[in-house]
Length: 174
Image (cartoon, rainbow, N blue to C red; front, side):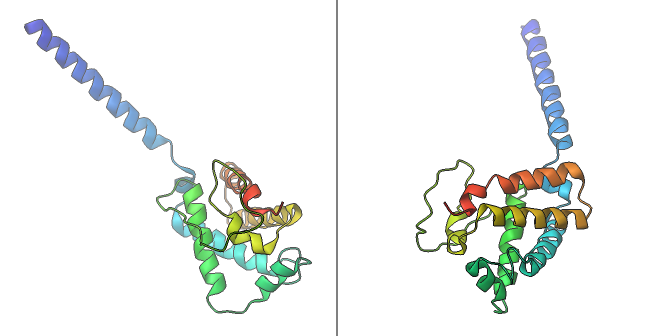
């Protein structure tokens, strides 16, 4: 009986040690969201990025893509602010933050239907804009500039850009 008690105490001790080791390990492995500084720095980057997209000649007010051009010239008072919120929420989600992005519902897009395990259903929102691969890449360049503007470290910058690029098939027209 005494030996069984000793074995149980040893097993419980081992389990407790393993538990605390796992807690310590997971607390040392911060999410990209945490390494970016959380929601406020993410919102600042998104704000700066969004304002510069509107000004960008490839994807903004002077875009050759009439849909992007018209969207960028829309002067409604809440449209861009709402988009900034949705972009901030999206970045917070894909970087491992505590927020979850939920896409806006639109009518079915004729270009939609692509399968992607990591989809965030961005295709319907972007379908009406008929974004080309080159235009998507220009948006990525603007995102890189915004990250540089806020001195985001190279490792985190590359992770954000990789997460962004992973959703290209949801945004670019077929």
